[in-house]
Image (cartoon, rainbow, N blue to C red; front, side, top):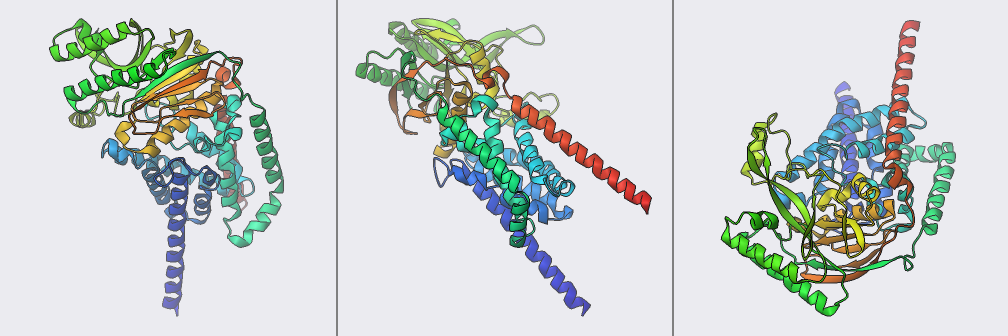
Length: 540
């Protein structure tokens, strides 16, 4: 009899584990589909409001023996699905990034479970706060990587995201996470517990609905007509080539394409006031080879390009490798390279050097601590850059602008710093061609939409294969070139600077406030729980 009972218990346990694994897989799939994905280039943003609900159900149902494994597994699968295109960049990337997120969730998921135990009534509120804290913390430091922060899935829901001008992107993300936390907790005891939970928490639903409506009212009232603002007409060149592939022949081909497409754009509209090329659209360092002519082939290409700029009547903004001789630790001069943007107006006028480098692929500051890993990256020909130091504001064609390079536009602090330094528009130069993936390029662009809304400034993107587009201060995408298409675009954009937003002034204040409050509430809950346990043990 006992053996039959044991088999029934084992079967029940196996069924429970199977259900939990299925729920985790469902949550990971819904998470990935909320953003631009292999199934939908633009993403299915309504799914973001419920995508974490299955995860929160598992957090409640799973025992402590499984919760750590679930956290590890969920983090890995979630980001392997969401960032599947990293495998195109390098086989190591699709391994390293999901492993990093597996480690994050190994910590986060048990914390969320502990929160559920400590706060049986309003735990979902604390869980949502902790989730947003996790999203904020993982944007900081060397490993900062905002891809997958849930609020970014809402880039097409323009009335909803206008509140970012006050709170930054973070309030949008909190509003997206809360329904999942609520629904997951409502179903944590099964379908039978859903109605009692909802009835018990009606006040939260009323407050959430009121806030949601208020956010939409704010969004509809936000500035959306910029016709009265000063305008500038820009040309964008998308030459559709991975600039780093092909060596000298490819560099020559890229140069010719860029010049040819620029000529076609100007022939169509001679009133273009400034031309935008992409990140590292031309790889050989123009300034370096002009000064040090030890490579005749590359010097010839550089000379042809500088002669072209000298013949033009408009300024050109281009991405280039900026090589410089600088003293090393021993005081000896050696070449260092910056990922840079150059402004040519007949001649070289200004240079911006990238401030926030991509971890591993552009920068690895742990050569001494982890020499074996550093050497492994070097073997795989990762290109190291030196970090820039200045928030450069360019001035040309009557407008002041700054140029975050590639994934610098995913960090809100950079764009607001440019604006605070006087930039009137943001010009992002990007090379995402290596991904071979439209969803990868769309995920990147989606974050740029928030930079425009947060600061109420026009954001434009010049890329070599996508997504080349213009984004107005309310987040509307007004012009776009089809990805992976060789083409040019002419777009007139507003120079809108009638307001300085609260986000531009205060930055990520809401994310910091949420972090402090969430950790304080969590710590207080842990403390009170410990006090109760101690009192009970003494009473016995």
